[in-house]
Length: 281
Image (cartoon, rainbow, N blue to C red; front, side):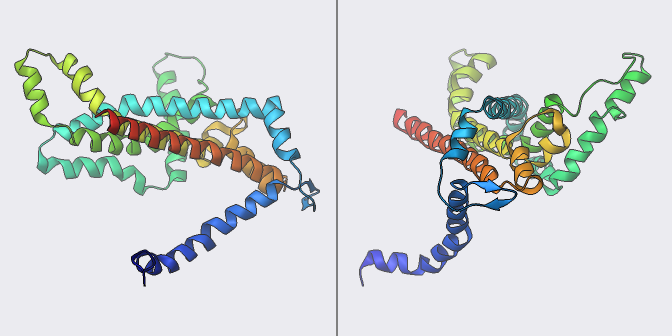
């Protein structure tokens, strides 16, 4: 028996399982996307009509642009909020890091639906923020903080912030402390040390966290549905509507596959950027 066969043979059951649970369903989705639909029934015959219709219709392109802009806004917010928190974790004494890790990861133990409804109670017209502002006479009528892109962005940033923090911590922990000592001896101040040492060496974690948050927000469903409502056109909500409300499975699978291709392209970009960073080093 060759060494290659001996290596792959124990993996064969796992590969078969992955094929059954992942490859076959995705292949079925791809097949459905090339069919027409009529009154909820998938018609025989292959066609590119679904892809051509979605990729040429202005409303669909606007929805995709809106989805990507909101995901980008969430990513940028998590970067600005996550970097200081990650820095605090890295600089904290060893005995406190476990507690800080737990505090960062603790929201992940709460169901996303519960967290999102919590934000709805905070940002709603009768929510905590509006009630407090009206009680202090800062506003005379409730602000529109939910049911729009603003509420969706705030909720999405809170939901996915832990992933950004943990990605940044990994990169910041790998920075050699002697670099900071050397830069301090050479007279570099805190700001210069951040831009010349911390930020460049944190780029791998920054890229990984950004692509992870961006791709997860692209495919998020609960937060856009609850905090965005019908006012914001979002791809994942459109997939849900087409599949379970309109029973238009070919259109739903086409939208979901387009979203999957975008996410896969992002991960390929991450691999290239990471590889480029290693070569540069």
